[in-house]
Image (cartoon, rainbow, N blue to C red; front, side, top):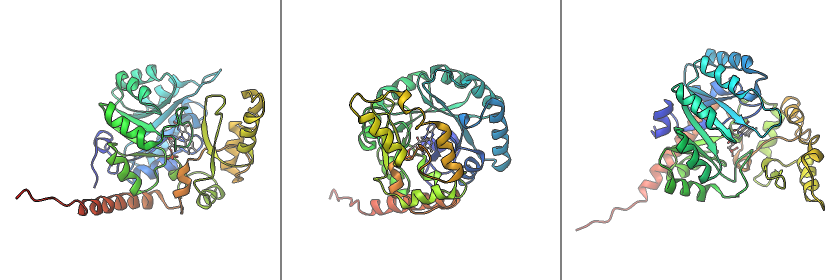
Length: 329
Ligand SMILES: Cc1cc2nc3c(=O)[nH]c(=O)nc-3n(C[C@H](O)[C@H](O)[C@H](O)COP(=O)(O)O)c2cc1C
């Protein structure tokens, strides 16, 4: 067993978190991850309203008696969702662990802390990590350049970002972006992290509530198969490379560039959702990280988490065998 501040604070057996995933972080996946010993996280905004989130939390609790959390992602939006309503619903339903992500999380973090909850805040720069630390979060989730979704605009890969976290942060942090196996977990621990956060790897499991074709597409793809969209809008997102995302990039690169309005139809969340429902990987934009290159199968969460744990223990044992203690005599 690998014990870290993450396993101790969150009460889980294995230092592996399943990060919030729009349209994917639903009860069946969350409960499977938690039952496997990791920390499953329900994605609040995948539910249409706070009452539906209550139902999702109850459903998850029916399938697991292990700890799980709720993700609230604060998006730049003209008509923002009812973040406070989602947060209150989850707290009232007894959820004790929250993953926050996105802009200006101060108010939510303050609320969760006043309710005695554990907050894992996800961010992509050391500057943001330090300000979340000052806001009183318990754990930081440091998302590097490799990650699915929003990596920020600084393009710092996980190795340097996590080593910087080791230099700068006082509270525990977990490593996110590009992790998919036991070797990755050990590398994260070596960089001072208390565990890993994974998105793409958990998308491609038996219990992940997306179409089988998309899981098979991930298995068949390589680390060359993702692309950054919205670079020119300074809202970069790593998504799967397909005809739609390539069209978006082409519009952004044309002389004069593109405004969000020019891209709106191509990038609509509704089209992305249909990808997961009907299994056509070309139908819209869908998030994926470069860890797609590491994914070769579609295991159950139980198999996956057990395999990561075993592989990590073997790698650590192998590494310690190669350390020769020199005699002082
Ligand atoms: C399909 C998908 C949807 C995601 N949606 C969200 C989201 O709504 N909120 C969020 O904070 N992160 C979201 N993420 C990011 C993950 O929580 C996690 O930070 C990321 O996947 C880590 O990188 P990895 O995919 O290389 O493991 C999403 C990732 C994926 C793959």
